[in-house]
Length: 502
Image 1 (cartoon, rainbow, N blue to C red):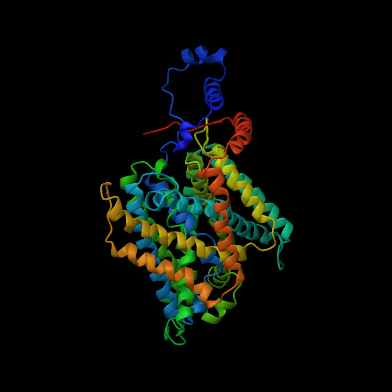
Image 2 (cartoon, helix red, strand yellow; image 1 turned 90 degrees about the horizontal axis):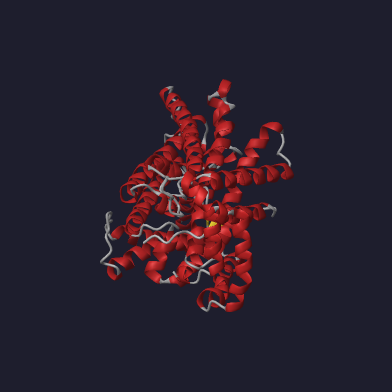
């Protein structure tokens, strides 16, 4: 908010210069171009189909094709495994309905950030943006691109694992390509998302139809006595839910781009109600298909479940499975990048991150600095040997923020009664999401307490060391230091502060 009052004269002057090209060409451009000039804000370019594709395309990554075994391992049998996949879909839908109410009530981009700001004030929102922008989003982007690189390079190394340097270089190339596409155009990024989402739905349809054919042939022995060996451990079932819900992660993606959504009060809830049940049905049917071709123990031993299924059932054309898994991971990475840039952009606009992150490309109307920042962090996260462990430890933080957001909905029912709510869910739904989130935060820590969780908590709260001097006190020397850097970057990238829209 103070962002607008503090904008220095140099930045305003430079904005005008960039918008006019130069003072000498100003009149010339006016006479040539009689078209109305668009406001320098993110444009409403995302329709209903693109919204559904963003949700579906980001939720369905490589997990369902490669390792749906974590749920089976924890649940102990086929029956509870399928029930947990279905239950996780219901929970994800309920969580997303809470986000539909929040997103239509507060039509600002940035995912949980504006809701936490409204309900609990800037400090909680800052800790969320600090954790998500610095760790959760870029490391997730890095993991998806590493997965993409692994499956894209594996055909060239038959019988052995591709060298680490090859997968890392390919992952870095994918990050640079995806960031470039997103910086070029919102519409282009949406088209890429739509195409790759259609590709992953096609391969899911192929697997499901093949599974139905196998069932029709009488391959049902793995589905009979489906509850024999069910785990009775409370912790194990919790862990199965934890892994299942991780596969559904991404149901909140559309809330990151609310400002770019056409008719958000209609399209946001519609996209959620179409997209998430679609993913749930896909997940359950794909798992049923897997069990028609392999036993539970075979599924647990398979290094890549969809590939094993393809070799057994789709033999002459089994090569299509790895190709479409590559498409699936690329589409998921594109969706992750698309939304991550919006959070950094909104956070910069509100003064919780450096000002340059809130600037918009003058020619292309994309949050280019925010997208590039996320890309650079992702490239750094590719370097360590194993970042999967990092993500596992930080995932408890993700669920803590989901729970806080559901709690924000309950709080605002009492503190912000005057806000218009085009969608209104029964208060019991956010209550349930708060309880589930609370359980999912504590379950892995109680099940296997490790020091790494403490380190993660320390990192999250270490953001306060930056919050007090730079955000709360707004120390002068920091602004003097950042001003020339911001101006140079502004000239280099041809970006300007967003126009203030009431």
